[in-house]
Image (cartoon, rainbow, N blue to C red):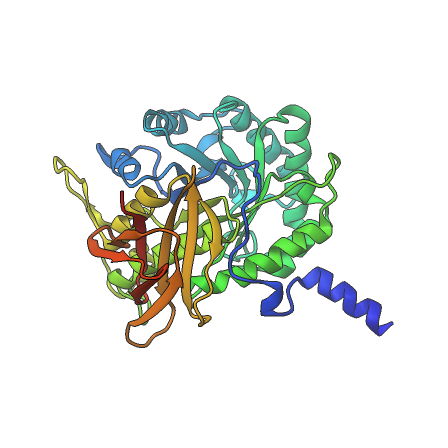
Length: 422
């Protein structure tokens, strides 16, 4: 019995060694449009706000689509606030990921939808919302962090969540089969919760699996988790249309600038490394948390996840003060929008990264190290004669040329982007 059991554990838990999970996976066709997004907390943007989001290159926003805010009376739905938001987003070419979430005081005193009656009401509302915004490219996410007691009080119950998600999935397939549904938007990488969802058959209804890979460690550590999750998905996949690629979405992930060891400068570097890690590991959609700081209290970590500061500045060209993370996002989108990961170059150390991305025959590189020591020099092969070098926040950092088809570059824990010289 030992060997079959060990084999089964390998299939279900995924990777067992670094060799099973190399950093970087070639991309695959995906049902989800590739892009970078940001979480927001409003339906009525301030003048100039959406324009600033768009100017950074974001093509998605993720936003709660709250049940209690859109069904004020039983059976009467009011989506006008989200109509206004969609109008503002579409004017800038931005798509919406709406989270179908939370309770409604009209049903079970606002508790999570855990009874059959409340689930039926939730499904009717979800279908009404999806039909109202149908054919507009919305991604519909079933709930937000149902494995967290803050969002599924008094404590998470995966069976309750699965019952709700299955009801929604069946209803979407029957009534609105062209609308894309994703889930479960788990807090961190909760493999036990995810596996319960897959075991129940939810992969048959989801266009993607969404997770929130928060961590206090470096962004590159997510690569192994993605590998494990991808193998778990493959092990449970049973779609009726034959085997299909079910991508993983990084639906919410950021670093507070006031966490221990963090700063606004380091937050910007980690944003760049997070996006590079995701793109290199087959994640078609990465959504940063958060767009704007939620406050100014230095001791409150939740106030400092934003790309921009809290105060609105009416009449200025940039209506919020941009943090280094904003410029990091803008620079990443400027140089890597539309590029796909090609390979990671071996440079002799596991903590040094040189990634190649390509588009229409052109290759750009990103290079950095996770070493906490002082910057050091690396060498790697290159078929290009030379590159212009830019810091992850956009400032020029000189140029490098190939000598005997080798590039020599000094790297630090802040990425450098190498763009071929014209």
